[in-house]
View: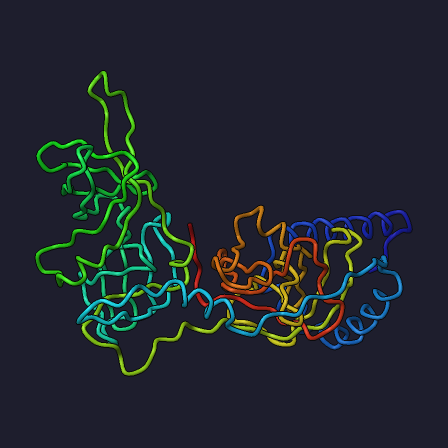
Length: 383
């Protein structure tokens, strides 16, 4: 149907305006069905566009002086370094089972473990990390278990500490989630010694050797006004960073096979845009070679983290090129354990990013060449 020239121009302007508004809406609220149709319709032009963009990006991208690249540590380096520090001291008649942590829940007061009754875990078992007492297992499935930290709300733990007179006294520790755990009641109404170490006392059913191991929970402190009779005693202690990756459960025997954490899903990618003209020079785009079961969260090259995923449209992913300092500022990075030859920083494992990926040192530039992989953790940790 042909219209008069003026009406035809108005019709085209309306159609183009509607298409532009639709494109803006889809950019903010993407539709999987629409993206799938576009991928099928324009899939044949994606490879040549990605190839052309790669070479164009090399020509027009801003050049920068590069410092010598540090060599990435071997795979599993952080796991080995943490394992050497996190393993508790031997306890007579017991064995420490290493169990991976696959989730952090309840604002850091509960740990979801990647093993269960299949390897012999049961309710009431004690978990530790290094010389620190963590808590007890409360829920057990065949391949999963829930460990409640002693800071969990209304969790009660028997402890022993030193009084102001230098005597050993017992007390009950009551968890209050994100707030310090409360010491109440204290045996014989004694006054604790401020700053003394608080140790695990255990239950009657716990092995005596485990109780005598001296697992610590934290340091005793007080708050409130003593003159008004409002003074209370608490234990200042948090979840150790080592326990975010693995814990050790006291058991009568070791399982036949060690428990391995689930591997993150990954897919190779090719560079589509060296830098983005809209988002800025810190952003790059990559085209995935295959789809992932979940949205990718981070990109690697030559064993080094390039940056977190900022946006995804189909198989095209935009990443923000962050160095280690940006991860440290967000609390998403951790250093290697004390006493080890730490080659920089590693990812902490939050927000779907796998734990233990190498970030290098603050200020180090990412590698300019090499294969790129996009990863997503098989679980989500929340603190």
